[in-house]
Image 1 (cartoon, rainbow, N blue to C red):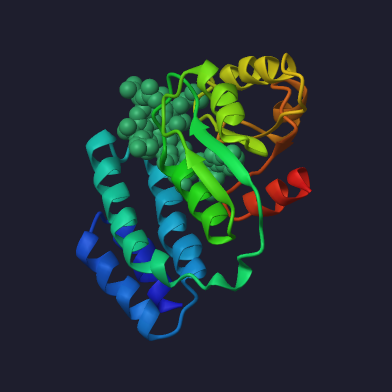
Image 2: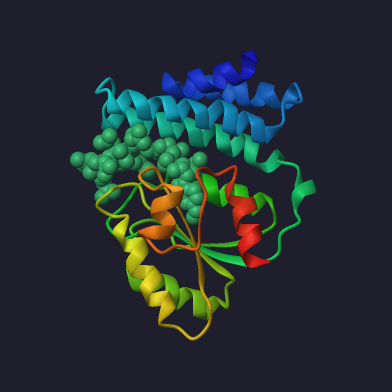
Length: 209
Ligand code: B1M
């Protein structure tokens, strides 16, 4: 699809206006906003990630790409259909301590949000202690942790240990590029894992029901 391609390219080429134009066109043409986000914007950002790994782009370029992504998100987000507003429950969500990569977390937040879940977003670089504390204050149902570096993913295990010390059964879902389904459960002691934002709602739903 040409529009999806232009959304993708706009993020890769750091062309905010191209993204905005294609996002508006997607709405006019009846492209599902979720598809435009995931198959256009997010797929573009994945390519940027690969380019960064190859040394083809650097930090300032990445930030401009993510601005283009957010510009598209601002246009598309209000139009996501609410037909799937079927989830009930509250999640405490954040990026772990020492880690400021929040683009993925924001997408996870968006997907949970549009499904009706009440998302308490603690942001990025969140102190370990804060998750369980907020969970209790907010009387939440689940904690969602995002970690993007091998050096920060260990925080998930620390937080899981803190959760185990509590009387109530606190469920944790983990995600982020360096984590696998296996390492989430076996090394980090999380209750569940989602590989991407699209699959996160399904996994959360299973855990809180
Ligand atoms: Co940095 N960075 N970065 N970075 N960065 C990585 C992660 C890295 C893999 C790049 C590399 O070296 N190859 C590497 C980590 C290496 C490692 O530990 N294995 C790295 C590094 C080292 C660093 C710095 C240390 C660089 C430096 O300063 N020397 C520094 C760290 C700062 C810090 O955190 N303290 C740093 C800084 C940055 C920027 C600020 C420039 C920027 C972040 C901007 C921001 O987020 N606001 C940045 C970026 C953009 C990246 C890459 C290029 C892309 C990450 C991204 O946004 N992807 C990344 C390389 C790469 O991934 N190839 C890299 C797009 C996003 C949509 O995907 O985040 O994976 P992702 O999220 C997905 C899934 O993972 C999943 O769903 C999301 C959407 O589908 N998911 C969940 C995520 N959280 C989830 C939670 C869930 C469920 C699913 O449940 C709760």
